Image 1 (cartoon, rainbow, N blue to C red):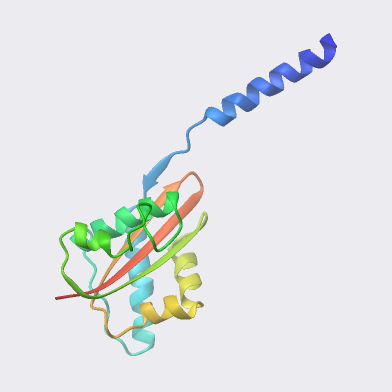
Image 2 (image 1 turned 45 degrees about the vertical axis):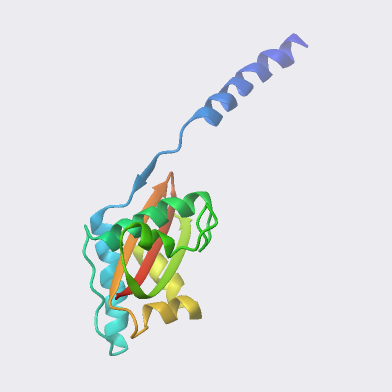
Length: 157
């Protein structure tokens, strides 16, 4: 019995330490977001569409970052409080006429992986290639090795 306990206790201690280790959560870099915008606008150009405007410090980008953090808790187009995703744009003071959202998550997913995934899903592809949108906010949030991507599409009033 003592032999079993002497083997079991160190293993349980190691597991409890691992369970208490915090997962690092952080926003993606502007360079990663810029790459995602370039990939999006390259896709649009291949289909004869104008590029979408992207500004790293815009109100739309801030709303996209809010959504990227939110989907780490609840991966859905609905927000954790039950509101629709577009309410994040309203909270940022954005008056909009048209809007859309694409979300993606995956282990170590980079901009190219997220873009490829969206490109092959009809609804997401429709947002990416819509003539109705003029601007985009693209945000990345990481938790450990998991990446959460958001594209918010918009035409302002």
